[in-house]
Length: 259
Image (cartoon, rainbow, N blue to C red; front, side, top):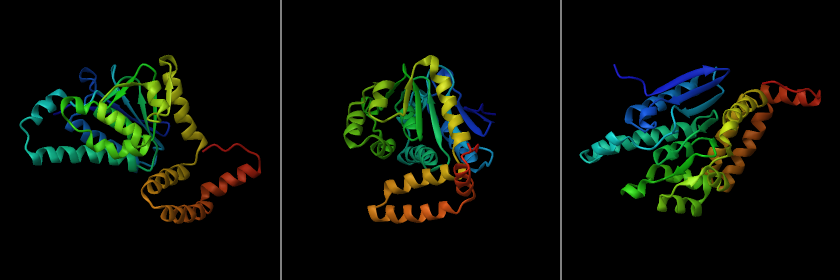
């Protein structure tokens, strides 16, 4: 029986996924990719989970592709490589399209595919010593699957520089260009992640969170007129939800609402 490459936990409406290959610096492996995809989808459908957090065991968040897998690529057929690529794309899409917020808690380096994994998450909190980089071109590879997600996140100019040079950047630089949301001192890392999770859990409506994430994804792909039409319809629909009615009443009563 194969050992699980991830660990999962549900606690206080938070679904946490740990990349559990510390001896391999949590390098991506087909089994890990499948397990992680399945975990994201399971948490998506679990009503007890409001927020999802992806973390890594050991020193690194995720150091890219597994060396064993890279060796196998030399002998793999096009069809085998295509299937492997589709699995990684399915993982990224599962995270990106999941209606629940997905946080990447990056306590250590996120390199190549690991940086791609962080990139597709909604919010990235990183310790200041963490490094980020899409190093694929330095080994003759192409950072193909992450490209469209990265361009949406940081814009074409920044994406070109990161993807073409394969350079590593600090967490502070990653924050400055909008790749990550927050860069903090290592001593404050856990508190910052926990505060973010608690804000999402207790200070935001679950219905509104999911609708807002879906809105962001749809607007990113839609024309201006399509985006406006969708936003108008969503705005009207949201007003009639139980959460909105409850929130409005609490506001009128000058009460703090606990979701």
